[in-house]
Amino acid sequence: MSWYGLEIPAEFVAVIITAIVVGVFIREILQPINARAYLRRLFRCFWRQDTYIQIGVFGSLTIGALVIFVSGFDHCIPTVDSGPEVCRNKLIALLESSPNEFGDALAGVAGTLAFFWIIITVMLQGKELSAQRSELRSTRKELKLSREAQQKQVTALEAQADVFKLEQIERNELRAELLFTEKMRSLITEIGESSSKGLNWAFSNNEIFDDHSSYGEIHSLSLARYIDEREVIDEAILKFRKGLLGMHENLWDYVHQSVDYRLPEKTDYLTQIIEKIERIVAMQGDLSPSQQERLSRMRLREIATALLNLEQTAEFWEENTK
Figure (cartoon, rainbow, N blue to C red):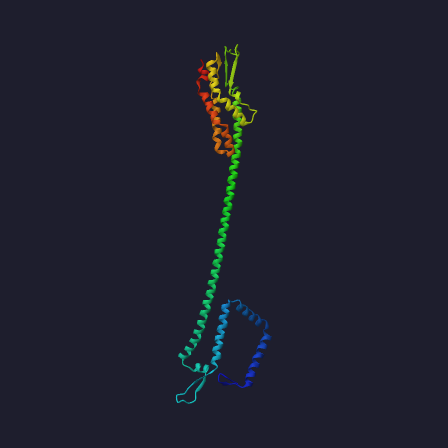
């Protein structure tokens, strides 16, 4: 048998192979668990590597195998005198060559491996960049979804805030409506009690005595005459306003046409009623639209103006009697 230019007897090859098989068998018997565990870890570690790393390892082994395989052939060099060619094994010729030639051969093999691993590195970087781009796309998509979710949350919060504001406005309007109703009831009560507070006019076509009796007919006028506390607030105020608008003219006629009369003392009672009406009118901005319309129908400013006109007419009060 000839290999690398060496003549090897077949018996020697058989002995070598037998020794190798026996050695492996003995090693397997002596350390079966450790060897298997080591190989298992080695293969597991290898197969966990990236695909391009595995390709690089297989490629490097393939290049090394090709180099070893090609080195086994003979290299023939023709002689100067055109004699028979001198053939030598390539590996032996490499080992016997000069250091420069030996370095050039190793540099060629190393350059091939380096170029091959440069390609593998570029492929790995491309794969990593592709993964980074995919991750960036996923991140942008997640950020977009997050922004959309935040926008929806903001919209929902704004809607909740609007609902809360509306509910707050409705509660405030309800409280204002209750307060408005109570103030109107208090106003009607105060007007109804005006006679008992001395706000009353008496006129007669004859002399009026100290006990308010007379030989003639007595006509009495008061604010309470035009108010009925038993009626609904709106109806009571409507009737009071209609009666009050003609009261000034009636008082003027009675003062100038009566033989005798009794006028009330001028106090701040009428002023208090006017101020109460002004405070009620000032509540309009706090009321709901329906209650604002209701307040507008009552025309309280006309009532306040009429009362002020009565208060400012000096002939209707005791200190300006005849």
